[in-house]
Length: 260
Image 1 (cartoon, rainbow, N blue to C red):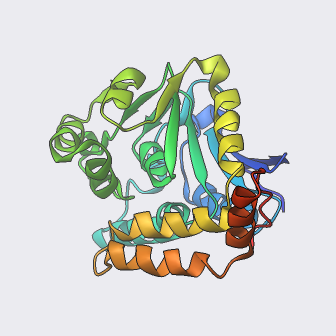
Image 2: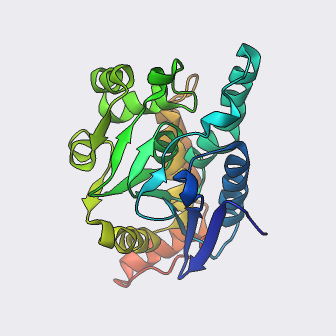
């Protein structure tokens, strides 16, 4: 499948998606959101891919925001539809992928860019990264899940401050508040992300997928996270991965998970 705005590579079980609009600081337009959905879906359904890393082309930006020129003249109905479609197609989609997805945040992650990073399962940032939700400075609010995911990660008070001031925070503050898991030098970002992916790949992909479901359930209205955990815990007992994992433990050897 050929893409205009994203690059895909697969190596040693790691799928990498790179948003490739450096002249626009990798800003998200409708076409890029569609391509990201397709690329993520493609890798998620590829049995050779155990972990996905999402990043931006170049050192200046992960994603510097949405492409404002596309929606500057939208009506109320068009604005609501834009948010609804974007959330369903990309942001909620990546959050609920069974394949663990890491955001490798290089440079600016603003607006839709930060929202995309927050939708990933966790985040690693370069030391030159700057993050924020500047939407209120444009007379609008975050529309791709930012008002929901940011408080989950950093707490309500800090999220309110970031949203209301429309300011950016540096990587070290993002780490301190729990917005990102790790901060590394720019030159080491992808290597570190890949080393983290390799650690994940040693474990059962089936169990990881079920763990993602259980964790996400706690943040969904109408779902009981504990019940989801119990149900998925039970399902693990019927998998080949469980049989291999427990057998390997008892035989005092490293497990080789079949992913079934």
